[in-house]
Length: 121
Image (cartoon, rainbow, N blue to C red; front, side):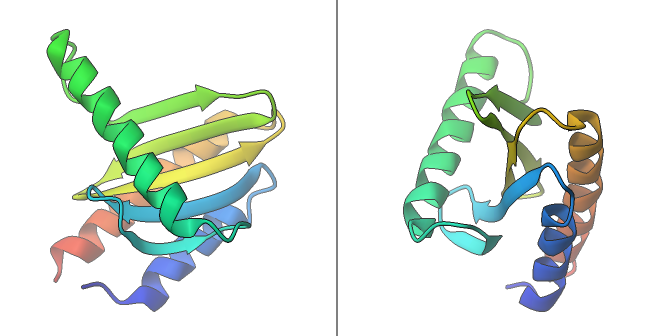
């Protein structure tokens, strides 16, 4: 579908940020396209992330708030951020408080690049 080397490079740039722990790209069906993860449960993480993003998207549509583009979940240890990248979903986890604005800005940049890659195929 997409040249995985380019995708891996984009995800690696995200994980090079001090705050970012994991970065994964999944289809809306939960199947993993590519990822830089510190866990063995990649399939489970991909499926659960796509399901969570889908549920939030359904919720925002139901309450007439428009389309969901970016979701931030704050946890005890950091954040889970999800953003649409064309027909895919980029999921990034952070540790600590760090510069979340920078993470979000880099995610938006990565999503634009990923959406262009997907559109070119």
